[in-house]
Length: 428
Image (cartoon, rainbow, N blue to C red; front, top):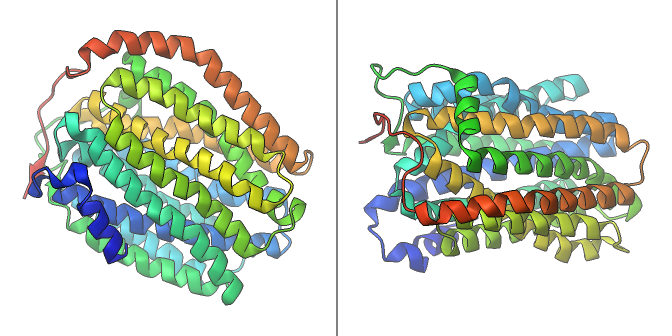
């Protein structure tokens, strides 16, 4: 992360009035995730362009996106359990090492099957790091300040998302596909080192009973109506949004005849909107009821943006629509992370986050497989129009139930949901 950006985040008004020491780990996690997502999206964009420009079919493109999601489902049964039981710094170091090895191999391997396998390996590292970091953040600050912490982390993460696709597209245009992949390996080395600097720790008490894995996480999700209902709607959004991810490269490159650099920049515009959405959600929204209500608004923004993309005459018109969708996406990420962090029991937080990730990524896997088939049957514009409209219908249909639940939760916004459990958090 550039020094001036890090300084900006550190001096945000809602941070400067708080105890700096309390937020030190929040800034470290923000830096680590910014680097990780920059590297991940730069490498993924590079490989996407390599395969497309090499004449790969829609099924191969879908396979690449599937390889970047499937490990999140496959590893989920053990990832959450590891996050609750093993020293978090050990897990982050191992995850970073896995990602470095995968990137180094991807820089030289050209065989399509091997590339897909290595992308899956790259994602496996993320599958371990994600529930570990998600479970750590609520232990760093008071639960009433959790939305602020997630806002900082979400804003920093989107900086990586902004730079990653743009860097991948631009570097491919200026050189070849090897340079951005090697640069990604270097960034993952830094990610691993920064992750080791996090002082807050979980999973360091061997005497705390941890069992149940994925099934325990799913049980806890089902027992909480706020978490379970939001998760279902979020999975529907992911199902439809991931289908448009398969269509995107064909819409930009083939239908609208834009360059590789433009493809990367358009993806970056979405993440610019995510930065704004993350910051606004972190500053303005409080209480479990408010989190649910604004989640509906955030998903609705994405639905409208996806539908409107189907009508654009050229790639430049995608920019404002992607910005609007990105605002909803960034806000939704912070709202979801905050609600889950506030309501999940501390002793099982890793398993709850891992189970939620598994549910969402099952939807993602299904959508990528479906998207790969649809690209050969449906025009990209039609694909965007149908997915956006279905997302909007789902949001409107689910709204009454979530709004009633939000009204019931509002008077208890300051109460702790879920049973308390022995803490396994340390600061050293």
